[in-house]
Amino acid sequence: MKLDVNVLRYLSKDDFRVLTAVEMGMRNHEIVPSELIDRIASLRHGGTFKVLKNLLKHKLLHHDSSKYDGYRLTYLGYDFLAIKTLVNRGVFSAVGRQIGVGKESDIFEVAKEDGTVLAMKLHRLGRVSFRAVKSKRDYLRHRSSYNWLYLSRLAALKEFAFMKALEEHGFPVPTAVDCNRHCVIMSLVQGYPLVQVKQLQNPDIVFETIISLVVRLAEHGLIHCDFNEFNIMIDDDEKVTMIDFPQMVSVSHCNAQMYFDRDVECIYKFFKKRFNLTFEEQPDEFDGLEGDAEVIGDGRPCFSSISKAAGSLDKELAASGFTKKDEEDIDKYMQGGIEKDLGSRGDATTDGDTGSDGEESTHNICSTSELKEADIKSFHSLCVLEQDQKGCAPEGQPVPEPSETNESETQDASDNEEGSDEDDPELTKRLSKQRRRAIAAVQGRRRTPASRNTYKDKGGKSSQNSKIQKQLGGW
Image (cartoon, rainbow, N blue to C red):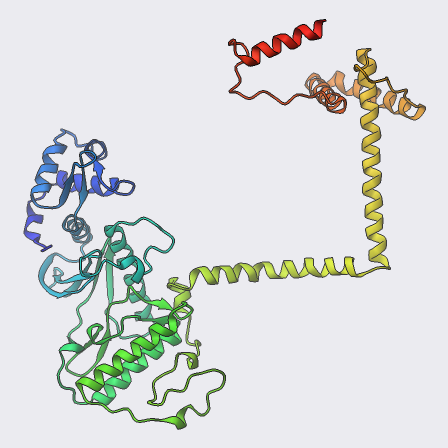
């Protein structure tokens, strides 16, 4: 869709307010209902439907009435929201011509108030030429559902973060200025794509520079994954600049070696075809490699021989293939010390047949058994005391005769409880409830509490059964 910024001049505050309302509604709606847009926009004098009609005329919204009457943002409307926000921030004040088109983005020239020219990259995922984003890119991660506008925003944020970090580490990349939604503002590279260059004064030096960039990225923990002649800019002084970073992955990615070899193969193939470079076999340089590093005859860099010692940008930027694995490793490392301590203690107690550890374990077992016996005795004394207070024994069970020790214990307990009950009446109620529950559990006649869905007094089966049981109990 062609970006016509002339329409931007004639849009009012109400128009942008309704556009923002549609954007907010698309967080949890694929098609935002008209009533919800009216509620979110909440224009003072109404007229939301008139504004929607105006935005629909300029193709900033798409109307869908298949299931219900609703609207969704188009890429042009999303462009206008991003451009309006960046203009209000003072990042740029004018939009110029289109200077690049890709399968995932469009690039335009923008100018600041002082005349400085910058580049504006608008991510447009979901084009017909490239719709396998879910399988080719990792923007979704663990998500199952997605929206093209949301994926474009994720790609822009990822590219802006990579560009900032690579610039700080001295890589030849454009200077990242600002980012909003799916729009990235960067410095304009004064050069040409390598695919448009027919002749070079020093193709050997340019080739070595490009290959060294691939190796440096891998040493910093990153792989470009799309490092070819279309994403390399070169100026008149044959100075190289890298572009296009949203698809970068970590060296710990499961397919890292395949991506690395593919980038190297693209560079070798292009320079061999365009500039007729020949790559001689250099077996002597790889004699000193140890381990399972592969030896490549034409001197290509080998992924297994690259040492990641220059930095960990993949960890800082949470590159694809790094975060989940490293988080698990960090958690295991954090819990490793505790588990080792517990394991050593467990081995000491199980392996030691005799000695102080065995004595301590037997002592613990004895203490737990003594505690259980004491609880059982106190429980029986509590049951006998409650039965004496009620003056009746349960049906079919003889009343147990308390021993002297139990009588003394019950007397002491009753004295203590009477003294405490007089002080706190609420405590007496709680203790009496606990006693009743304990006696009911011992006698085996405790009933499960009725649920809220049982209706006992509405003439159902449960009410009839309860009446029959009451009559039988009375007989």
